[in-house]
Image (cartoon, rainbow, N blue to C red; front, top):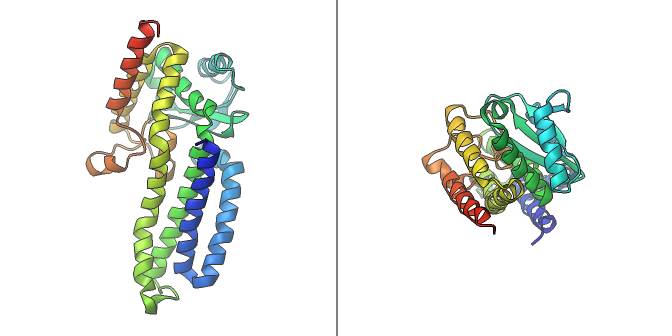
Length: 285
């Protein structure tokens, strides 16, 4: 199934969640309001979600003068992968990470944190950027960025549902609507996250492989991932939960139960697959 179809299904699923929350908040009128709100969010998510994500993290665009090594690395990869040159951004955060965004390769951007630039060597940085550029080439960025915007909107509406239950109730309180509002408050963000999970995990393995094959150094990405995960545990990023799936590694230092809902595969699995790929490349396959 193409990512365009997946994006459509995602929009429909999260729109249905919004309408259900609107029903709890305001009955029939609430449903119509939620539907109108969903249409607006869907439109904004498709056309402007990349700008929204970049603004959330106060990302600053750089060029060959402001960040010559990063820019030349991305430019080299764009030429190698036959992609349009994406815009390049630096996020002012000491926590090392990176992400790609944009609705298609012609309207794409890659972003790295300041911590990433300080932590990784040149080969590791190239491997990380090749991972993000593979997301762009595979058009993962469309569905990932839309998912971030829609999941954030669903979470916001769910909070309103919870507030409605605690402070005044809904129109359906006499039929148990208050209890339903609380249930939606608790479950709607989880439902949005589960939809993200269904999309996110396999694409990370594909982007890892794409990076390894482009750079011919899967071991560099394996090393980078291990460094990133270890550093994030020491210095988690102040990230929005709805955007966690965008990053190359989870920006949160989650362990135990939280890992069950991680938007990323375990780094051990990713490293193992990269090591297998490294053997194949060394063998000329």
